[in-house]
Image (cartoon, rainbow, N blue to C red; front, side, top):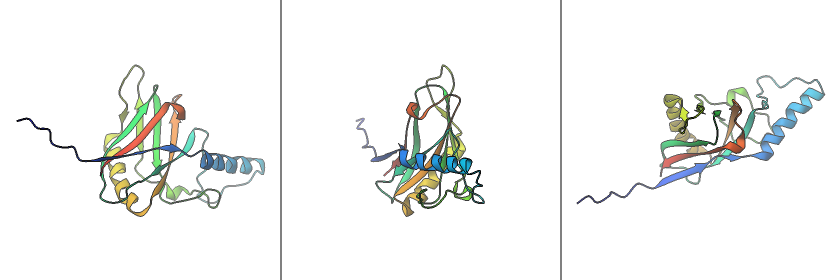
Length: 162
């Protein structure tokens, strides 16, 4: 008999645009420009095409990375960079050394249905998130949008086997 095996439960954690932190980091750039100030040594300044997203790990243990679920409404590219610290930019600045390697790069070519990615790196990045989830409930990411893509055109989440 062709009984279907029950699928293991999946945990899908969405990327949520963090308006407040994005705004906060933009204000930092503006204030440096106005005062002709210099960033701290090694400080990561938010570029105009970069936005802060957060992921809340509803479960932190016994997760296995399955896949990225990134949907783009139009062609373009998004680069997803994880950050290593639980940080509040209104208190401390984000440093370049807190940006994680490797990054996930997802793109959609003109006329294509499917979103493609740098598979090996994206897989390694996903597996690292399992480790990171154990020690933090919330993780912050920088998403850089290029080739005309905008945050409103992205729907993304990370899928784990729970």
